[in-house]
Image 1: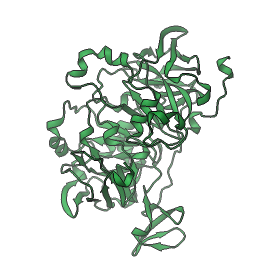
Image 2: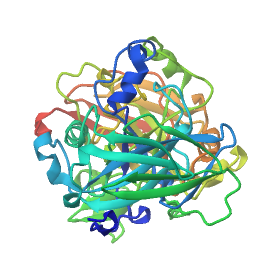
Image 3: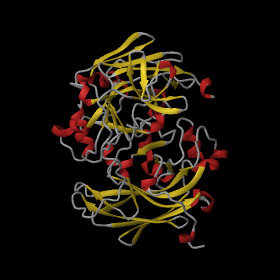
Image 4: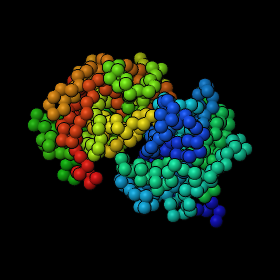
Length: 500
């Protein structure tokens, strides 16, 4: 049967309903080529669990796009991957049942700037605009042997790579099982199996095509930054958020989702009903886009963790991505897995972007801030591995990032860089700091991030935490408070409540 005759369904990037997660180092050939380096510093051991990254929405573009790359180094790595399209909620799915959650498959090209380190590469290498090319899609039942697809890559029409997409650390079913052990995949999410071999390098001015004979072909061209002449084909959503002039929250009550405002008796819904805090389910106060989290952005916290840090760099901010499934609201429950030795909170000021920001200089950066909320970003340090730190298994667990309770408009915060920040565990003060002590302030972060990616309305920057992180246990109530922003309450629970 001709590959072009395969039944497909609409899954173009701008109708993409979920998040794209990419598996890295899932090729046995890639690990073999690293040789003994996998046991040496900074890695110290081969990866034990899936090495994942979030491919944020600004990176998504369709086949046929023209993609800008920086003049220096003037080339990119191109990896081609089979993407698994999730068709139903997938949580703790076994290998035996993995096929039941797959709706289809998609051909994806993952671009990245050349980088020799797999320890903690800067976010700018992979999170650039249009660096994830979405190609043909096919329904699951029409792709035979998804674990054994061949991949052909051509540059300017010349074949430069031809490999069998079957030599995997984890195949499709095994990857789904390993990932859904700690994070829930939603319908419309895409889980990339990862490049099957070494990346191919391509330069500005070249045209690239990639083919999986059972799935089809995608193509794109590369050009230097600043030289694109046609309309961008990437996914750049809303340009301006709805800016409120009063604090607002999002809550679930009586079968609906409501906007609420503060009230002396608790909170008031838009329809006038007044309720107490305990009567509603608190949701993250805004509809969140890309989540960009800062690590080691307070000097005292960097010192606090210095004994476990293999490599540190002061050259640029340490930024990593999180998926929306990690979010929980005010008064939410966060699971502590059995057997964990060190799980800690991180009280952080969350900055909400209000309008599109691209190549913004620091003197104009605050014009793009819609407002703020409080974040408590948990980490399980037992699960840290020295591959693309901090690993998603540590930081992207279901409900491990509490956000809320209120969205506070920027106009109500005179100086976000002079706010007291504290955490109390069961009423005891354990963390006491100030946003004045950020290593990289908010304008610096917006300038840095917007230099390589388009920030969009609803994107959230988690600005890091000061020293004072301590272990928390099942039953603990953790309260993070930031002066003028709010008081976020969260409770630690065990496996039983989650059926584990």
